[in-house]
Image 1 (cartoon, rainbow, N blue to C red):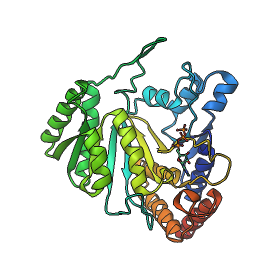
Image 2 (image 1 turned 180 degrees about the horizontal axis):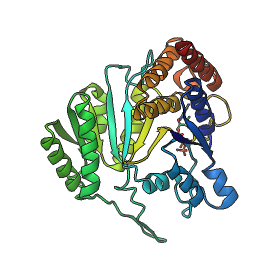
Image 3 (image 1 turned 120 degrees about the vertical axis):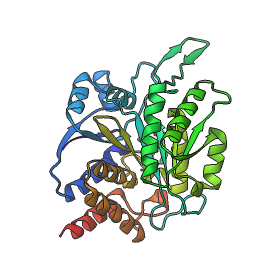
Image 4 (image 1 turned 30 degrees about the vertical axis):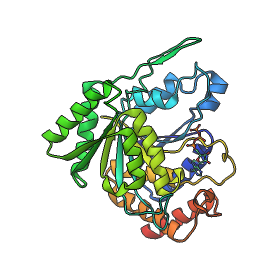
Length: 332
Ligand code: ATP
C-alpha cells in the first residue's frame, strides 16, 4: 500500500509524527510518501496545494493527514475541500466512543455512535458570491449525493445495531426535504430501523442522551458541528479520529484542527491522530494491527499517561513513546 503522509500546519506536524512512529512499530509493508501542503506552502508558493501534489496523492491508496491552518483570505483555496472534492471522498466517518478512564463533559461513558457526514456538497459546495454588502453561499443537495451517503450509513448500521438517525432541518431548509426523503427511502428499502431528528433537537439530545444513538447520517455542515460538539462527550478534540471515504481513495485525519495556540509546545494530544491511523488499518483490512493500536491507546490512558487537554501533564512524545513501547511488546 502507498500512503501519502501530510503533516500540515500547527499541531498537525506533532501528532502525525507520533502516529507515523506507531505505524512504523507495526512493521507493515506500507510505502510512505511525505508531502508538504498547507499554510507554509501557501506563504512560499502562493498555493496551499499544487497540481503536482494532487497527482502524487492520486497515485497513493490513502492519506494520513494532520491539520492545516486556513487563513482568512478569500483567495485561499481550502486544502481539505480540494482533496475531498478531487478524490470524491463523499463519506466522512466520525466514531464517538468513550476511551479507557476518560469521561467528557457529561461524565458518562455509556455511548458509542458514529456520525456519517455527507462530505462533498451541502453548505460546503464552494459555490459562493461575495460582494461588499451581501454574500451568498449555495447549499447543494443532490439525489445522487444523498443516496450514496444514505447507503453508506445503512451499510454501516447493518454491522452495528441496525439503527439509523437522519439529521436534517427540512422544516426550514427546503433542500433538506430531498436529503430526508432519500435517506428514509434507503433505510426502509434496506430494512434499517430509522427515525429522523431536526438538527437543533439532535444537538440537545446528543448531550442529554448520547446512549440512544447508533449511526447518525447528516449533511455536511451539520455533521461538522455535531461531531466537534460530540468530541466534548469523549473528553477532548484531541481524542476523536475521522475517516473520509471515497470509491477509490480514503483519507484519515483527527477531527481537530491545527490548534495554533498550542503548536510547537509539545503538548498536543496525539491520540486522535493515532486513532485515525487505526481507522486506516481497519479500512485496509489490517484488523489485527488496528486492534493493537486501539489497545495501545486504552493502555496508555489507563496508565494515566495523559496530555493537559485531558488533565494530565504528559507531553506528546511521552504518549508516543508509551504507545510505541506497547505495540512493540505485543509484536515481540
Ligand atoms: P484551526 O483553525 O486549524 O481549525 P483551531 O484552533 O481553530 O484550529 P482546533 O485545532 O480544532 O481549532 O482546536 C480548538 C482548541 O482545542 C485548540 O485551541 C486547542 O486548545 C484544543 N485542541 C485541539 N486539538 C487538540 C489536541 N490534539 N491536543 C490538545 N488540545 C487540542
